Image (cartoon, rainbow, N blue to C red; front, side):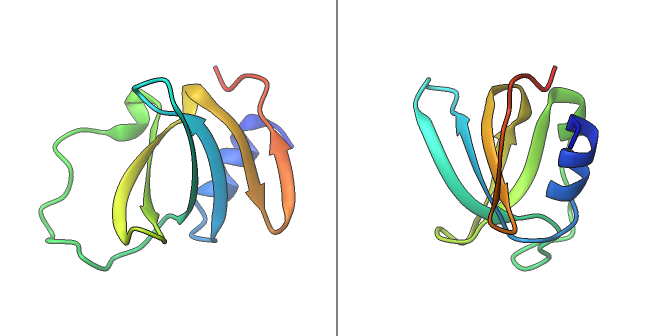
Length: 89
């Protein structure tokens, strides 16, 4: 699967697990999904996250919205299949 297909799968609203490097250089594993409408105020974001290589997701454990930095993505697990990321840029 190429990187565009993988990002499209991640944006499909299905639950997936992602491992990435956070801004403070620590690893994070997040169980999340996209397309969640709960807790949304209707205001929207003041910027386009995809232009900054950020994927907005809903963290299923913390029940909060988060951003996944696609440029520091290490791996993604979708439907029990793990994809190791060499480079998304």
